[in-house]
Length: 358
Image (tube, one colour):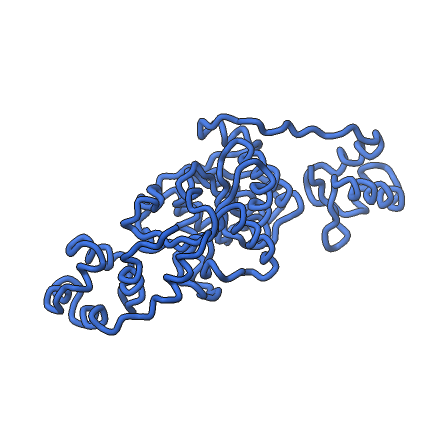
């Protein structure tokens, strides 16, 4: 994408210390494009933002050569508020960023999208849900937005890429910074087949204060937000709150009443979020055609193993309790669980516990 000829001026204004997005938008509303702002007299600027900020705006220009070089390369883009390609739905949020750095397919930012968020330390069932739901939405033509964090975010991105659609990763770092390091390969996969987005300058490292702010972009780029698993203190609830404030629908998948990772979802449902049991619940609510998503079927299993699964239910259980329920010895249960784990039907958890994952 050819960089905006005014990009150096935009970069200058967004680099001025103390000049936040709201004040910048006030300047633009009063004076016009960044070139006009930078050409304004100190007195004119001071009448809008005060003497100190006016002096900083009229100070030395930052070196934008690295940014212009990056933006000129294939697959990279920097969208400004004045750019026709700037996603219209982001203009609906209270604090849209003046610049969006994009690596990958920038056109995805204007597509119909759903955000999927959740715990960084999910259960196996939560991971499976995030991946399978995202894959189904992707097959239905819905772009999946998430934050490229460990856990639910990463699973949602993987599921979306495995479907026929794509995904957008919204970062709390510069788009050229792979964070966390464990997601480096996924970071590159999204850059090649989806889009990475950040409002932060190139090279910005991870900082705790950046991630709550980026959550408004996750919800802002989407028509709705689905929370898969979340503790009551999860940052995913911040995204859900921002989505509600932005007029987006909020969906949540319920879980066991004993699971701390279900309490955030249950709280959202109590507050009016829509309870979700299948991908169809979300697609129907959003009036999205289900497309060519393949039906998910479970292959016939061993009757004894299926009976053990029934005793296990859908909550975390320890080996001795499961053996008592099934009327089997711990050794018999352990052998059957090994087969079920190899079949991808259960997962082992710390403390000798197991959980069903289908």
